Length: 89
Picture (cartoon, rainbow, N blue to C red):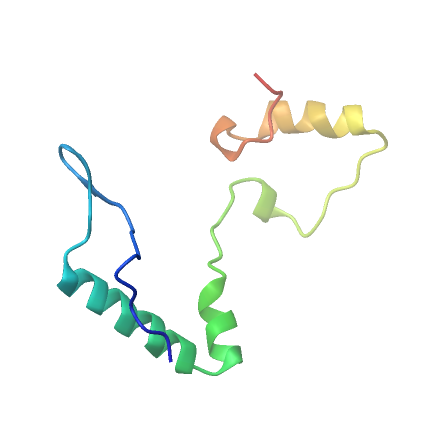
């Protein structure tokens, strides 16, 4: 069983910058960690990965390109920039 350490320092964001968590927050985090550690591996893996729909990419089972240049051109023309598949800036 994990024990909280007096030396454990986890920054938490606050309006004015970074602050240290109070003892109650540390106890809550510790309890959540211990509860997660007791779950079966299959359950932890199920909760570990979150599927996020990616427009265009998820709309077809697969795509094939003759060259990497073709792939990059397709990405630049078809994918939203926030997905990060466009040309490097």
